[in-house]
Amino acid sequence: MIEIERKFLVKKDQWPRSEQRVVMRQGYLAQQGNLVCRVRQKNQQFFLSIKARIDDLSSYDYEYPIPEEDGQTMLDKLCDYQAVTKTRHLVKQGELVWEIDEFHDANGGLVVAEIELPSAEHVFEMPDWLAEEVSDDKRYTNYALYCKPHSQW
Image 1 (cartoon, helix red, strand yellow):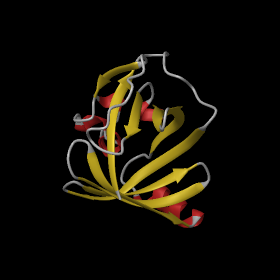
Image 2 (cartoon, rainbow, N blue to C red):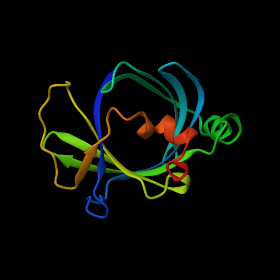
Image 3 (tube, helix red, strand yellow):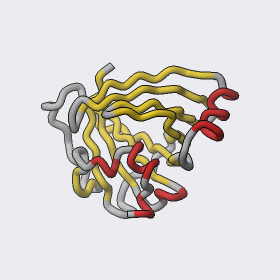
Image 4 (tube, rainbow, N blue to C red):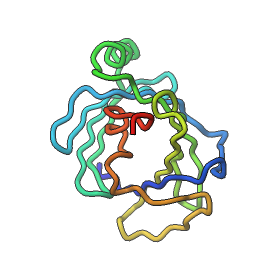
């Protein structure tokens, strides 16, 4: 599946909190060029995923459920660094959904909003709580935040 998304910083304390949220923890098992293999916990479910960047806005993105015991072991024993932890708030806007990631631990204080688009040219409404776009800033990828957390910049 090809994922097309844009990513933005948000204005401090102005973004909408949502009743619809997912607590996440993710770590990385391997990286080669633009490809990463990660293990991710979403609430109580675990997934193995492969993501390969095509360009600044799009990636191949595959995700498969795995047993809880395997996921726990991968996150706790097979990842080189501390897992990225965040709460993902889902905010519907028209036919699209904003994913607002409120990071914790070493990335605490960072809040990033992503919107997945049906095409790179798709026009969407820009909420007033968005700040600068960081779609092409590699420091804001989850893999980069895993290797060098926001608190270390």
